Image 1 (tube, protein in one colour):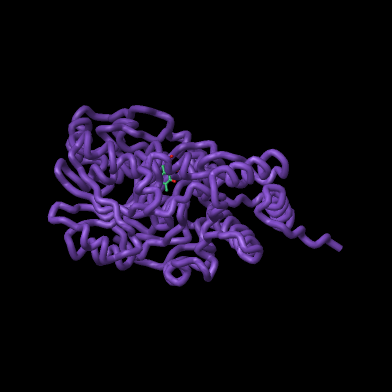
Image 2 (cartoon, helix red, strand yellow):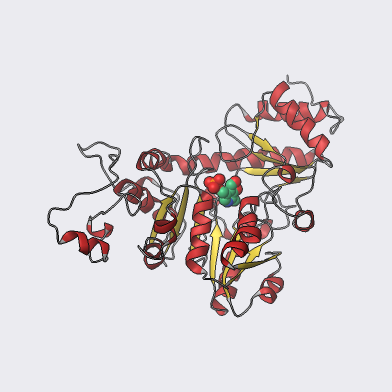
Length: 414
Ligand code: PLP
């Protein structure tokens, strides 16, 4: 695994020029590839020739355009290799299936995206006898106590969805390695903010659907890790990406590759605006959670782990006490104030708002929702970067006033 400083300038990681010298890479839209001599075919199928040698066999295996985007992802995360796939869930499930066999065990953070929870809580035990114990990932003693002889993976989100707790990645990596397990980090909420591989993680996964793509028009995922691990995902007999087939379309890869160069600017701006709103909310006495606030329980840890160019992420949460109030505030924010959209997902250039307990975390049992702090009145806000910050604050303040959450008018400008 490559260890190095987090990168802040992504321009230098674009590898490919277009076929005719275009500044953007060309799209290799073929689903199959010719060989010049019949003997090359068995060489390809038996791994004697591979994508690294410029030899491709079939689009569900390596595709040159997807491979090029994947090298951008490897550079982004500072890993030897990466490969992109059809969704974040494909990236998570393929990584776990690659690291675990029938009967193996995972220790997972209890604060994970609802789909990830369902995968480990319901799907994997039923389909493959891979079991998971969910723990408070900020309690290292609890993590260690949950490790069993058959534990192969410690899984966590770098910055958790939706509760925004920060994982102590270096400590978790040491713990995993001491027990012969590997640390897998979902870095969807914090690309460029956290560099999990540089901090000791073995595998980094992304839902590129979110910040990395940034336009809410594509579902996509990525897995970043060692060359051996990525090759394993593509093994013709046992590789979960090759066999289960959650393939990324090369046209999608080309589109995402055009958005990576401005990810750094976008993350910095998401973070600047989220911090601005979080500070204003806190001043007004609203229970707000954002890792950039000194009042956040993991603020010091976040400060020590993060890349300082990219803030603390673009998501904040407010606890509005009940689902009814959270719904009312979202309704006002979308339909009266045009502050943002009531929609799941995050990392969009406009603001997206949802109530996780009844949406993206609704797969969790009531007990796990409670223990992981997903209160029914929790409102998750993925802060966009359209409009001015003052204008957005006035809209947010207005909606909180109209819902009766705030009582004092903002002073009139001028
Ligand atoms: N990981 C996190 C942290 C997420 O928030 C999500 C989706 O919301 C996923 C993974 C799944 O990603 P996708 O929808 O691209 O499969």
